[in-house]
Length: 206
Image (cartoon, rainbow, N blue to C red; front, side):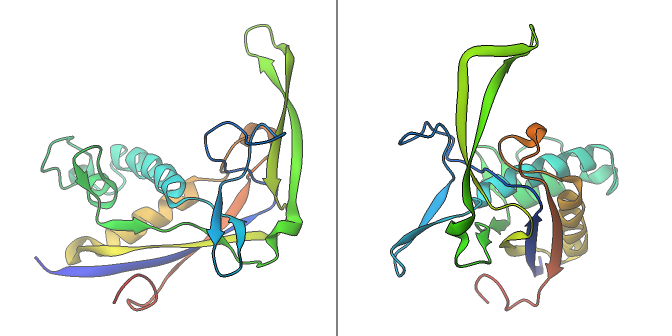
């Protein structure tokens, strides 16, 4: 089987503040902190968007598109061990087989991104009573706002005959998403995306 390399660079340009957190409780006076990565050269922690977050959002979108047979009936997932569908090929099968592509963390293009860190207060609502809950004030660490850009890459090797379909599906999946992270319904994390197909030597290993 002949393999071809997929190499995509995506840019998420946010026009509202965004919070992508650790999924755990706060370490200090805030309730929700940004996910950060240590830069050992600069001895600083920078906010990043984990590749796993990007992968999860894209997987949900590609799954929905494949079920709608956008790429043909043969790409609908059969949920078997040897399933050759797009979802299993790109993302793998849970607890069984890894996908063919790597989803790197998205990092800010601005090296001085910390100046754009802020705190957003909020209050939890009771869905049934439709009123604010008692003692439910919380605080969320956010980054940026208008024109903040995070950039990441997706790369790997896929069967040559499926390469164009894989690239098209990932671009469609990005277009399927319009907001990211906590507080989307409250206006956080709204973005526009640009996806560029790179030459084979532009990302990952040659």
